Length: 437
Ligand code: ACO
Image 1: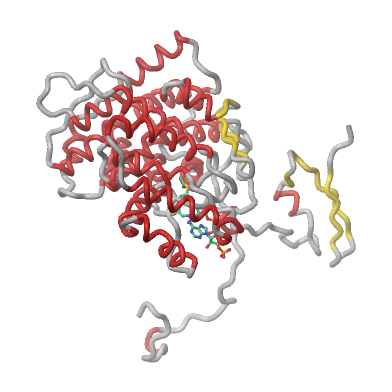
Image 2: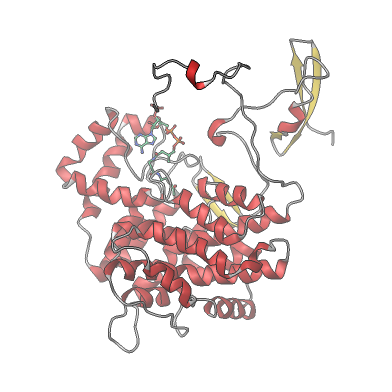
């Protein structure tokens, strides 16, 4: 078959260029051949916020935003969410195939035996003042692990990488639970190796004086499903940070901390906390129409609505809605659910939201379930970071093994001054020249 090419006629020179196409994309480096003089830099592409730029090739996660499709390694999210445990999905996302039962047992065993935090890390956490935001504590503590495991810097050694993957996936729930207990002034609870990943997490969060914590199986399973839904989401903002920091060959602890920092933003993982604040602000179902009008008039956004990639119902939001029913059977309903359902109903009928293809995203309902499970809103983004650690690590491994990847370094279009001569301070006058002064 003839190679697919894109022919470009440069009207500045009347030269034509045949650029090879690869999977529907043109390589930005091929544009550099397009120039008006041999010593010219050549054409660049300009794409603020990566609206239309593929930064890598990835075999981890597939999304079709128009059709509302999400697949991990080819498996539809609807199937893995119902039929797998979170650690089974973590294995799939990281290693590309569903594990055999032997592989799964060994994987679960490895993760379970890396859940303990070093006592120095515990002391480090104790340094935060009470009521510190748990996400800030989480980010700092993950980063602090880097000081404990200096061998992690050997990012090109597969065995070393594997050990850090065990450690990170094993320890993030422990760190998350400690940040929660610290905020309450409660003593830390050590991991219990008899329990599943999520049941142990619940044990570290909520065990008080009982000798053995028994998680409610429906709630533990709901948390497992929520973790599955958040395991990976291809090249989102935090994953891009993970790849970018990792591309400088920084160790995985500081890279995950940087990715978690990106996740903490209200436009990304911090949105679920904002959804709850918004539902509190709305207060009751009858005030929903006025709130929607307020948003349409340009006052803020409907948090938990809209997505860069999904221009359809986020498939994760659908599964979360079903999970909410199971959770509420155990916990009793969350009154905010009625407000959320009304908000969704009105927004999905409103021309403003329809025209812009704004649908509920994963964060719209997750906060309501998290609250019903007993989490305060400030823990929500931490709950997102635990499972997403799997996706960050899968993408990090893929990036390190990709021969095409190098240190991430975008170009810019310079818009500043041309060359000008230095002005000594006594010749600069007294009038402020910048808004900083
Ligand atoms: N409420 C009201 N209007 C919205 C919303 C919203 N939630 N989201 C987008 N819009 C409007 C924008 O104002 C814009 O309108 P305009 O064309 O009249 O200017 C239009 O829809 C397109 O929006 P953009 O901001 O250009 O879309 P972008 O892809 O850049 O942003 C984002 C996506 C950041 C998710 C945005 O929809 C948003 O801020 N949503 C609320 C925050 C949120 O829920 N974030 C979680 C995302 S999921 C995740 O990270 C896990």
